[in-house]
Figure 1 (spheres, rainbow, N blue to C red):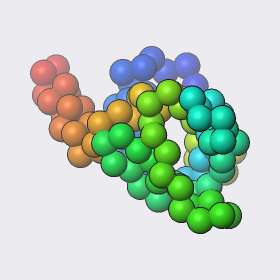
Figure 2: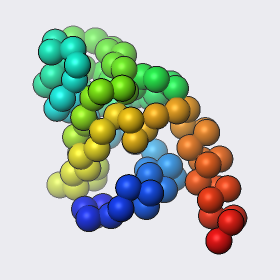
Figure 3: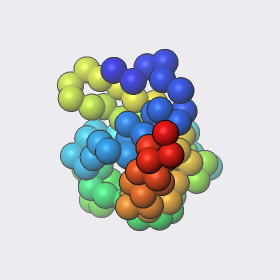
Length: 102
């Protein structure tokens, strides 16, 4: 669905799409104990994502990670955590302002 989209366009798509409830897997992380963690996306803060895993709820820093997000069955999104940087509501504001400039 989002394969081949440029970074700004992907960010705009992610801004208006809720990732809550999506299955997520951590592919790369500065902390080797976090690589391979898989769970359901519960939410996010400015610097972290919150996943519900088999072993409980995990809070993972966005900086330096690479995520695979499974959306609606067979759709897969691979992106760096930095692309989700900032608070979700700030990303919406930023995308709204960018769309108004056109």
